[in-house]
Length: 355
Image (cartoon, rainbow, N blue to C red):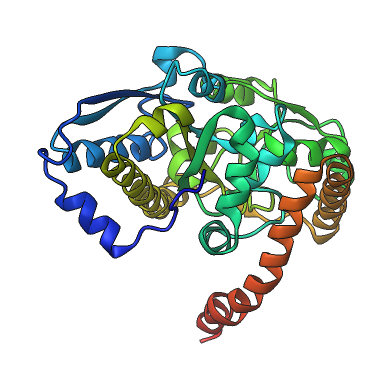
């Protein structure tokens, strides 16, 4: 099935001008999130999407949003959408790496593309087609669902000066980054979000990775961990909208257009909101907790991380043809995109720092 992923001006106009008379069919869907209803801006993306669909359809197409506090299955979103328990889901693709390792690419991977590069790859570099190919076996469609940009490398109780400082460290960190850290001797664990603060405060874990200032400040980690490391592991974390394929195919064409339009708009909104939230949160953090030390991992530590990451990628590529195909697609696009990133955004920042 070929989907129109790029939203043209004509499509947007059609969706916005579609009258209730044109789309009189009543459709009632449900969407399950991996997050609680209060975890903004993640929870705002599906809420904004549903609101736009309802308004464009004149109230005829509605989507009820349910947070993890209601359905109690934060990591069951793919299965529930696949089975039709929910017509839609909002989650993060790398949560499904145990089902298909190739899914990690549609969220983010260590030392990968930044958000601008990844968005271009999705919509103009074949990424959407590769994502649909990967998710075909699950009987669902997957769409970008909001990007956090580069995430911070985590909160640590002690400074990391060498690779030896990582050995035996207990840390919460998901995805391939967790496997990278495990290769360097870290005891990697996954703890539910609601338990993270207590675990860090009581020493059950020594460090954790969450998102960035805009979301971290709500968790309070800055109150108990003085070292805040810059990122390497999630340079462009893209959330996802999952859609049950059979439910989607039953929609009238105008509803399909509304849904795709609303998802793309909500995705852009979340990226903007997350950036703005982080600006405000960091200003508050550094004012109220001046003891926070923003750190970057030493070069030799980063080199070992990159070596471990490259090794993992090579291992998975040798085992899985789809993983290899997506990896090579991202690598080729990154090589092309990074040239422009360096002479545009990167050089501009350097120039401004030197003035």
